[in-house]
Length: 103
Image (tube, rainbow, N blue to C red):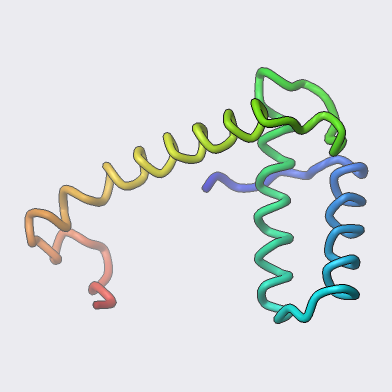
């Protein structure tokens, strides 16, 4: 995923409120909460920087079409990233990787 740029104060507040609510009402591992923060930052960054939105993040502005566009954008990014790596894996040329495989 691309590097997350600075998100708006509104976006940061939404994340903080959500994580606090989860910490109070759910029994979640701190690592899970950190992962939620990362996912939300990525989503809010996409929301605030996409050509279709050009507005600061507010939960009220998120609807099904917004989530669908985000999912499609992430799938395209995954396909692109995978296409850069997969041919080397399929060819069996592990030496083409800059590091030894972990499996």
